[in-house]
Image (cartoon, rainbow, N blue to C red; front, side):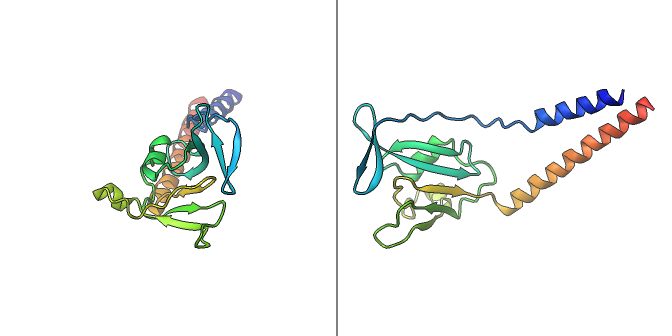
Length: 165
């Protein structure tokens, strides 16, 4: 009987830990170098670029987007930020330093969300990596939820052991 309980718990943990984030496919085509930067030409000749977006968003990963894509379009492509995203300090890491010699930027999307102000946006360039972190309070709440789940599973195990003893 104890073996059955262990199997049930193991299976429930496997199901509980599944990653359900959908993966949006990207397509690859011919690659050319333009101005020493990595661009890709699409099937109809449009110029595309690879951008990496990580962190607390709906579908993180690598995307191939049209050259000149702005933040709003990119965030729309990945399904937007999740609840608890820190939109006041989004980091952009450039693959190549720009003409000012900078390779790291911070963007605050809160002013855009409040009044549509795009003045704080930087141009997205090929192979940029954009990282959206969680707010610290959200991370703490998430950890408390995990602790609550562990307590719940432990309680179920104790109850099942009491029933079968």
